[in-house]
Length: 321
Image (cartoon, rainbow, N blue to C red; front, side, top):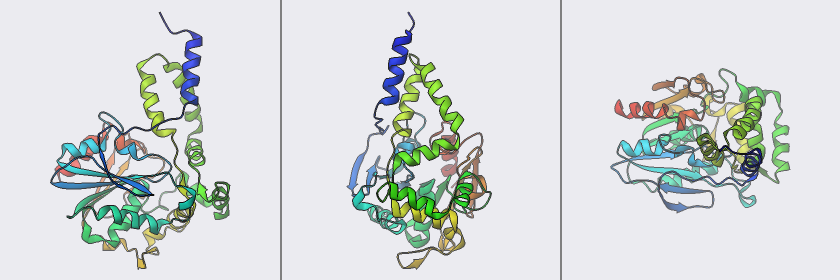
């Protein structure tokens, strides 16, 4: 007997109205509980891989989403001891933290490692990882940036159009609305508006999926996507201005910890990864650094990190490195 219209509508409304709760796919141990982040350890191996997840309004489980969609599991299978920087949602007491504070927090986490390590930065975590590596090149033996706007101005795209069309005071207003925070739900709305028609279609797809296996998959994805995290207002405004508006990281004007951030200081091997269909970080923005360049075909932004077909490309990086 099929599902009734009443049952379908009730389950649809329950799903839309519930509070999503992201869940890590792989078991892990929290070895640092910092006010700004958890440092999670997933396995023990000879080599260390440290993943910097994006601080862009979502949970870090994008690195460990599910079966066949976990970069963490891929790295474990390659013999790495895997650690993940899992950012916490920002609180009002931390609203004045900036990019420099994020670098300090990555440094605190990296001090757990007594050997050189592979540093993997996803999206926003990619430009942060590049800046960190330029400041502490002695710590890193391989830098991997994936879907990261390293040269944020080249090629245009939605984010560049947004920054160029809106003055900085507009973004300051958003932070003021959040009491000094860039609120996660506001960020989520912005991401959805990039492809508004598709996001409207999501609700139709959800309603049609009730009572099928696809519903469980959508439920699992919504646990990550619909759970939004707040950002420190100062950090958000610095990122908009310094990374996207002025392109200070790429053009060598950024200063952190009293030092100039010079990407030419990066002495380790570098791998840059882009998605062919990424409309958030365009290919030339992601492949700006020297070294090995990889474009994963038929893949959008988040697919770079958790797409099933993408895991084979991640494996190839280490097979040839």
